[in-house]
Length: 330
Image (cartoon, rainbow, N blue to C red; front, side):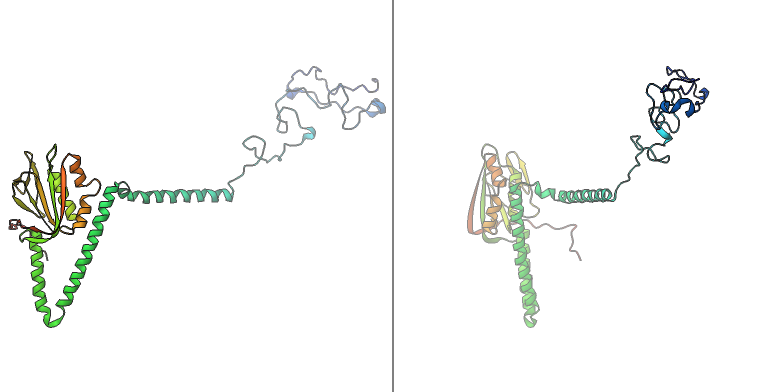
């Protein structure tokens, strides 16, 4: 049976309306038409598709499960070509078949440098936090600490010079015995002054504490004694308003009682006067530092009067105490 030239021949017996069918029961594709039957004018050009008809091996969309070579949309790729990247290409995160890329050497180097930088900063912060004690101190406290250190350094220098001179004299041969005797006498006098068993005389200050609206606290007197000791005071005594005096030594204590102050068990009424021997300028600086004892007493309404003297006498003596437990060490 012949058809008019240019009319395509249906490839299969599948319904033309694209109805779904079982992919296993599809009829085989019809053999290509004989060129003798179609004629020269009715044959299609190679690679072209006649209009108004389906290609020979086409099947309706969705007419079966997608095969291994099917395109994502369900259509077979032309010519049966495999997907891009070859059959062994691994699909990437986006499903496009791109291979995964590992971490480059430059990225690894940057990560190591960042870790080292973080560790260095942590160590530096830890080291800086160890000096938080002085950084948090007040300015007046820092001034007092610096002044005490300078005074201690000067006293130590003088003591070193004196000991070196004593060593030189003791090793001078015939005069060594006499020098040793003089040195022992001097050391005995120094210890007697420090212990309060000998009177003392020298340059110093007299400091009077007068009460205002409130009586002077025993803690203020103790603070004054501590500041004077830190400034190099060598001998001190305190005198009450009744003229009684008590020598201040290492074991002296101060207690408040009925508006008065007990010093080593002896009650002294106000005003209280401390007589001290030492470098006057250094002790004045220690007393007048911001936030010191003078500022504390005046802040409570009291008054502090300081006088400098070329010579003062510390005549009060401390009772000698027999030691029960302490013995010289070896």
